[in-house]
Each structure stands twice: as C-alpha cells, then as structure tokens.
Length: 369
Image (cartoon, rainbow, N blue to C red; front, side, top):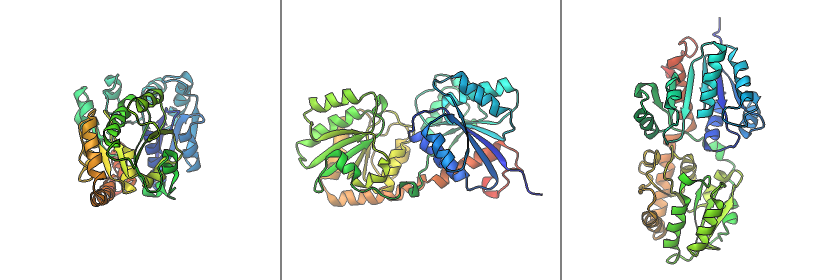
C-alpha cells in the first residue's frame, strides 16, 4: 500500500511581493516536484503570491488580509486548521501569530514551522517560542533570536536560495535604459525597497565621492518605497541630478541584472540579501556592507565594509572601477559563490526540517534523515 501524502499548509500574510514572497514561491515550486507531498497556501486574496501559487498548481485558500490580525484571515485559517496537516509553515510574523490563534481556537494539534527572514529583533519573542521549529535564513538571524531567549536547538539555519532558471530569459538593456546609462557608460546600481534599513542614502553619498573622478559612471537604485522623496532631495543636494536615478520598481528586474557593472548593497540590516545572490548569478561584481547575513553571503566573492560608511563604500567601488581585470575576477567569484545559495539546497534543508518534526513514515527518504 502506498503511503499517504505529506500534507503541508503554507501561510503568508503579505499583500506586496518582495524577496520573502519570492522565496515562498521558490520553495513551493521545489516541493511541488516531490510526489510524496501535497501542499496548499493560505494567502491574501488577490496577492501576487497567491496568483503565482495557483499558476504552479498549488491549491490556494484566499483570505481577506488587510491588516496584521485581520479577523477575516483568522476565520479562513481556522477553517483550514479543521483539516489534518502534517505541518503548517508560517512564512512571516503575522502569519505565525494568526496560525497560533487558529490552532488554539480549533484545538487540532498541528506542527508549526516558522520562517524568519529579517534580522531585527522580534517584537513578540514569546510568539516565536511557541513555534515547534524556526527556520532562519542566516546564522546572524539565528543569533538574534537566541539573544531574545529562544533556544538555539529549536532553530535551523536554511539559507535562501535562487533557481537560475527563474532569471531566464535574460532581459538585456532594460535596466540600462531605465537608468539612462549609455552603452559606453558604467552602471553602478542597487535594487531594493526604498526603506530606512536598506540605507540607500549611504550609497548616494558614496556615489558623490566617486562621481567627480569617474564622469562616465551612472548610478541608480531600482525599487520603490516611502523614502523616494528624501532620496530624490539628497541626490539633488550632492549634485548628482542627471547621474543618479531612481527609476522605481522594474518588473522582473533581476532578469536584467547583467546590465549592471557593479551591484551595491548598502544595508544597515539585512537577513541575507537575495538580490545579491541574483546579481552574483548574473556575474556582477558586488560592493556590500557586512550587515546581518551579508557577511555570510560574501565568502570569497566580495570584501564587505561597515554599514553607514560612504567613504568605505566608495573605496570598494573605485577599486573595481579602476581596473577591468579586477572587475572580471570579481565577476567570476560572484558566479562561483552563487552556487552555494541554490533553490535546490534551500528546498532540501526545509524538507529536512519537516522530516525531523513529522512522522518518519511520511518523509522516509534517506536524504531527509
């Protein structure tokens, strides 16, 4: 008699689509190739993640999720919890809170796995202690949780991963056109939400230190967010109007990362930095801080600098600008380092976590022991 499928319920509260949601999509895609497993998703109605899951053939249970603790989401989760699940995987803090409430309301035991992708301290460590297992995307995040009193033995580190096929087909020229960079100009760029912890202001100040000595360099940050106005004013204040652009959110930007000559990650806080991994896959030289998990991501690919230091960031940019052979060597190192952060490795690590918590008979493959 064949074994029953391992029943897995994903829960994600996000209405926007950022790196975390892309990781959930990549995980579901990888798990979807495992015939031993049946997965479903509870997500905000109309969200891009819900649409992506449905396109992959994942059963989606859409709920109203307009706020962190939306009663509509709780009702939908409670309905889902009435069914038997071998594991419930909450992919963000709001999803975890409501999953715990739903489990309590329904009274049906369910193994609860919680993903932690951000490196700032959680506001409710007690909530995270109630998860059966926590998956942190870097050792740094694990250590932050441990300092908040969560047992190290209950936290697994599973690095985020990117499937290179998700970056195909390449979209050459998209980002260069958006940044106003000509074919003979060097494009130095960052990608990410325009929010405080990404610290794009330090990138702007570093660019100002570089610009006079390198007139053929153009700068850009691809992304959108609440700090657009402040960054626009700063670009003007440092005299980079026309050379430093904020083109906004570019659809499928990572498919055009090959347009970038130097990728900059100036973050003050960073769980790991999946945009860096995407740039590495494209063979782009990296200039980044050591914030959060970025130091773990670096390996031999780049030399991380302290956050909030424009001169240090500018120094690394100029080192690459000054010598094409240095850029070529950095490009090769980026490609090699990216292999350590594959979607396949991420899926395997997550399956190992499930196997350690759920009945062995359901995930009995030797690779998951």
